[in-house]
Amino acid sequence: MSIRPILIHPDPRLKKVADPVGTPTDEIRALAEDMLQTMYDAPGIGLAAPQIGVSSRLLVMDCVKEEGAAPRPLVLIDPVVVWAADELSTYEEGCLSIPEQYADVERPAAVEVRWTDLDGAEMSERFEGLWATCVQHEIDHLDGKLFIDYLKPLRRQMITRKMQKLKRELARA
Image 1 (cartoon, rainbow, N blue to C red):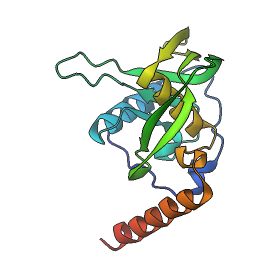
Image 2: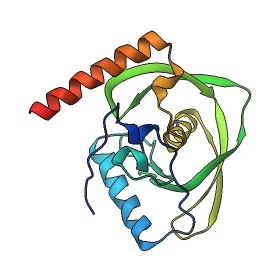
Image 3: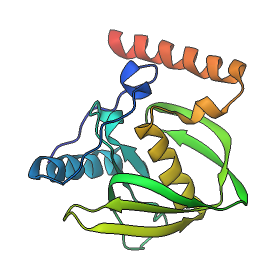
C-alpha cells in the first residue's frame, strides 16, 4: 500500500478516456487500496485511476463526512450510469487534480450506477445527494472530463492558468 502522486491539471492523461478493467486482478485490488489510501490522505471524497496516471476505469469514493461515523469506502470497476433523475442539483465541486479551485456544477440529483466490485460481482446502487455528485464527477474523470469543463470558457481558462502557475511553482520547489 502506498500513497500515489496525484496529477495536476493540465495534464493530457486527465483528458484521455480510460480503458475498461474487466475481471479484477490482484494488481487492480492493490491499485484500489493505493487509491483509497491516496484519497483519504489528500483528503478527498473520491479519486479516479486517471488522476494517478493509470488509464483504467476504476474509481474509489467515500462521502461519509459526519464526525465519528464509520467510513464507507467504495471501489467501482467499470462503472456505468444506468439511470439519472430528471431533477437537478447544484453542488460546489472541487477536485484533487485542481487543488483549491471550486465551482458550482449542476448534475442529476440522483443516479443509479452499475459496476463490478473487487470480487468480480455485479453491483448496482442508487446514489443521491453528495454521493450522486461524487460518483458522476469520478465517472467523468474516466471519460476524460473535468468539472471545469462544465464552466464558461473564461472561468475555465482562468482556473487552468492558475493550475499552470501552481505546476511551475511545484517544479521549482
